[in-house]
Length: 290
Length: 350
Image (cartoon, rainbow over all chains, first blue to last red; front, side, top):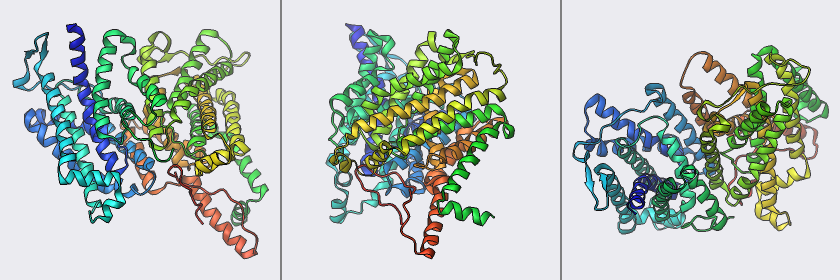
């Protein structure tokens, strides 16, 4: 029993990363209609920035957790302005390909500088120990990751549903032209939303640094699984993407416990089943044009 | 002379077509005299691989971002068959091709349930699944070490010299290219274009759109598998890189650089990209992705019709001018196109 609960917990923790990345992807997709292949690279850059900050400048984890997403959010906005913006009116596949090229460049830049070896990043001081969760003891840092990612997901949900900014973004997602007709300058919000999405990816990267290997390939390997996650959840639905993220994390952990051979392929099998059963994803709507 | 030749090509005279075909065959036949023979074989394989992708991307409007699954899947099967059975290499390659097509049936069936960007993500995800499987199934694939020591066996011929192997492998690649050409110019191929440009209308005309999509997906996977099998024999090994997402991305890049919806553009793209990567690898530069990624971005931003497409654009406008001079009727030409959103009618550019 305690094994089962512990695996569920592991699953929720790794699901946190899927959920945070899927959230960023979904927000960007909603506003721009773009699937950002470079999302994983921003996650990777987030982890690396935290590492570089600590190694070269002695920037502590807590500062990095705030500063790195800000910096990489700005980088994201620059990339949106310089590159992605030019293709927004074309088929979204072009931006998928464009961001693929960006991802290759970012990944190999880091590979050239740091190699493929994993860099160590210490768990921040206050969270080094373990906490007693009743049934078992669990690393404090993992508990922190789970708590903070759930809060971030809830926070973004509140932002989208309860604030004026969120209303505009949701409006632009649903009916772009109508929102425009109501006098909202939709174009004004595109770049900040993209920056926000990349900042979320960078934030999860910083969170990942103390518990996962910091290396140039960490982003690409993760984002491909996240693509399967958003197909399962339905990319058009922000809630769906987040829930699918946590669910897949749990399934993978349980798969690890009961059928270890399948742990890596399980997510793709689930994706295949969902494609058969509900092609639009669990929470997605049927595309108007099939 | 050049002006005369260009005029012939521009007016689409059949002699110009045969001339171009002959030039292409001469190029294919003499390639290992100009470039290092293994690289020549790489060019031929990547050209066929890119063509197989173009069947989907250019002619059916489906971006498969997981074609490495078929290239690499076939490379592994070809390798295993060649090592364990000791049969001549063409048999092994055909086994790999058949395996790739079998693999493509479920993937194609599932992926075609979605379109556009989701199709790309789904194919990418399934290719990654195959990557994980290849990584875990060490007994068969050698895991991270790859499958080594794939023999180049053909009874009665010594193929250890890559120069001779090029001429043994080339006929298979040319046969693949011929199949691609036949598909595009068959009634089936024309239905594909209809499915690309207006799926709703194609369906209304009674064409089973999904079945067409799955069929071309399987055919395309077979050609990718053929290319991957020859590639594996040529290199003597199959590795995880063959099923990795960067391979899927690279073939998309070659196809777009050459020009989608053109078939022959893939050859140009393959020559450029393979030569470039070879040169970069020779120079000891270890950030190949920086260069290829930048080129990818530049091509997508500035050069979406690709090399062949842009050339054809120019020739088409030259032809229109010539025709206008002669007061001839409007010529029927295939025009290069860009990706179109699903269900949206693409007007050919005039």
